[in-house]
Length: 240
Image 1 (cartoon, rainbow, N blue to C red):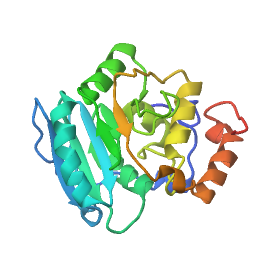
Image 2 (image 1 turned 135 degrees about the vertical axis):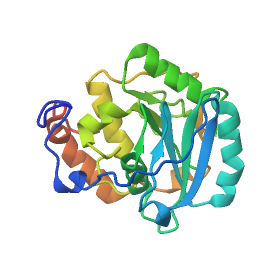
Image 3 (image 1 turned 90 degrees about the horizontal axis):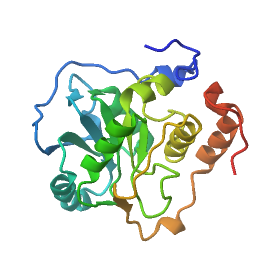
């Protein structure tokens, strides 16, 4: 465990410390294929935990019909074992909170996050895990067709590294909808912990993306945190 206050484990605000895992139960996982678990966000509490030796992934969503079509494609094209937790956000608590809840209630070497507007290339998960294994890096941005590895819109992370940043949260918990992935990517880049392979494909397919602006409070929070180096984790900077 890294010491609090170190570059990889800064002192955290109370909101970050609040993300703690509970429960002991775990679903059974296979050892050859990507398995899926469907649940409503209201079912996350209690004793249930999600464990896999290699990888746990979370997919928060609000369109169950779309996800029902997507999940089998993700499974067929993963070509690597793992556990995909598909969470229907019926309470609209937001992507960040759902992802943090599943991160806190799971255990695995790697943790991934994706969304309902994703479409996978063949071997997407195998490619991501292989890259992290071979490189020793801590964050892989999937090839989303837009950011070319500079931002992990959909990402696969080494759990131990993330825990050094936010303990039991995947993203800084102050964000509501946006910029959690931006902060995580900025930290990984500054620490030389990011690795990219354009063949690890999870395309972002959202025809209305350009019509929805970033959440203004999240935007302001990101800029404020960047000026502090995200709590002293990296050198402070002014966000563009």
